[in-house]
Length: 266
Ligand code: KIV
Image 1 (cartoon, rainbow, N blue to C red):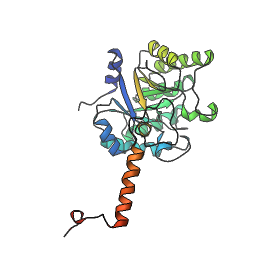
Image 2: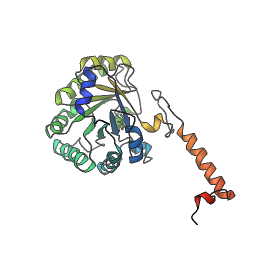
Image 3: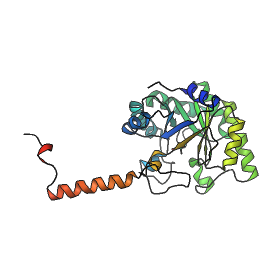
Image 4: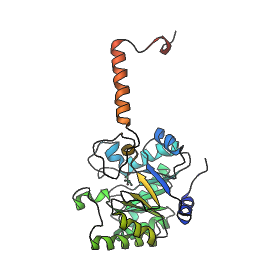
C-alpha cells in the first residue's frame, strides 16, 4: 500500500476528494483499519474514555499518548499517523508545546500532532510547525475544555461563537496547521469554514460539507456504548458479538466442551 503523507491530504482537498480518518489506539486495530485504505489514523486522547475508562480526557498524559502511538505505528500500513497533544501538554508555554510535540514524534513515531484551540494557541501551533512537526487543529466542541463548556454541547450556535470559530480557523491556517478538525458544530458553520480555508476540514458531528470525516472507532464499531452522540453511526455491534463469544467460551469450559482433542497436544 502506498504511504500517504501530509501532501496526500492537502492534494485531496484540491481535487475535492473526501478524506477519511478514524481513531486508533493499538497494533491490532491499526493493522485492520489501515488495511482499508484509510487516509489518517488518529491516536486520540479519547483513549482516556474508551481505553482507560476515565470520565473525560483530562487525566491523559504525554506518556499515555506515546505508548499508544508506538503500538499504532507498528500496525499502520500507510495512513498518516496523527497523535493528540493531551490536556496541559502545550497550554503553559511554547517551549513546553515544542518539547511534548517532539516526544510524540521522536518516541511515539507519529507524523503529526493534533492540538485543541484557536487564536489562544496560535503561538504554539506556529512554533511546533517551525520545529518541523505538522499540526492538525481542533475547533468546536474541544473535549479538553469540558469544564469551560459545562458538558458536551454543540458549539458555534450564537453569532458571536460563529464569528469566533471562523476567526480561530483562519488563525490556525495562518499559523501553519495543515488541517482542522471541527467537532459538534452546525453544518452551515462547518460548510462556511470549509469554503473559507485552503486547508482541509475534518468533521465529527459537523455535517456533510467538510472535506473529510473522523469518528472514534470504538463508537462506530459498537465497542464503547457508555454514551453514543447523535453524530455517530454504528457500523457494527461488536459489543454483542464479543459478549456472545465470551459467554460461549465460559459455558463450554464449565461444561467440559472446550478444549477438545483438536485443541490439545499429544
Ligand atoms: O480524541 C479524539 O478521539 C478526537 C476525535 C474526537 C477527533 O479528538
